[in-house]
Length: 446
Ligand code: GDP
Image (cartoon, rainbow, N blue to C red):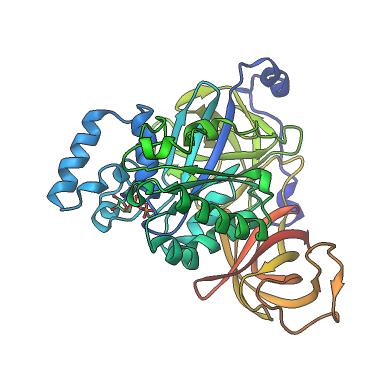
């Protein structure tokens, strides 16, 4: 992990085509790429809505749905068939919840989308953090049915919204779902929109980045197909969920920054490719033959070949989700959450950092787990430097306070048990005892 390890030989292997990747990218046919995360209270209808979206866009075929439907009926949960499009594992089906981040892709004429599905259960929030850290925007699903909205808002809805905002997500599309259960009531839609707007703006979202869409995932109204329900179209003729998704601005790609890729998944044991990793390129670019540095292990490896959407590619740039087939490295040196960077401008491992965090709970010198995407590692808040004004960032009250109240912003020092690859500006989430206690911006690795 020290300087020694960073002095690796980064001359490309013979297999490199020595392409000017940015030039290739400049002349390539481009489509917008957007990753989004789906958030909301458990049972809000997230899986059903996304299943419906994939079904109506013909990403899944009728036969698959029919098979799911008959399986679901056998289990006495017929309405779950659509949700199963997303929940692939049978264990998840038996429990009726979405557990891990199921990645699903679909595309419109304008955009290639990746859904980073977020589970609604409390103990699964670390997965949501991983999803949100790669998301360009969030789809927040709200259950509009009587009573459910109120309990959901007190439940995970607020925590999820705060979390995704803390992870840097700026735009949110709100699916005001299950509107079929309240006779497509405009009053109900307005009431919900006003309350959600109030707390989203309080959480730091700008009003112009918040859009509300009345819909029903189960029936498929305003998901892909515009609703024809007379009671709804009497007062709404705005975009569907997919139309609104397609409105997303092209992602800004940090193409010229040094290469950073956080490993989201590792595959071992292929005959041709014994070791492969996948993830989204956060910044920079890469090509087959390039040398990479894997941190925190400080081990060098090479890119044998690249796949994008199951097709071989010579190169890839920031914003793309890729699978890299690697060589010259022992798998024991790689874990999910590790970071691949270019040996010439590597990411450093840090054991200590300062961060500007929004406190969700009381913060004081305490044990915590630090999450950054899929990386999580134990550590401790060792010092509270100051509480800061939310608007100006100026120090409020005395320096080195002993405690930070929920809702306040503070600059803190965190010491980790082991050094991990982290750098500013980056988003971190602090958790303790299964709860999110704070989230914010890593400012300085020490
Ligand atoms: P998740 O936990 O947020 O993924 O929620 P699910 O997609 O599993 O849905 C929870 C329950 O709500 C299931 O019984 C669904 O059939 C039901 N549901 C989902 N969407 C709608 C909808 O638009 N209208 C109605 N009436 N029920 C829905």
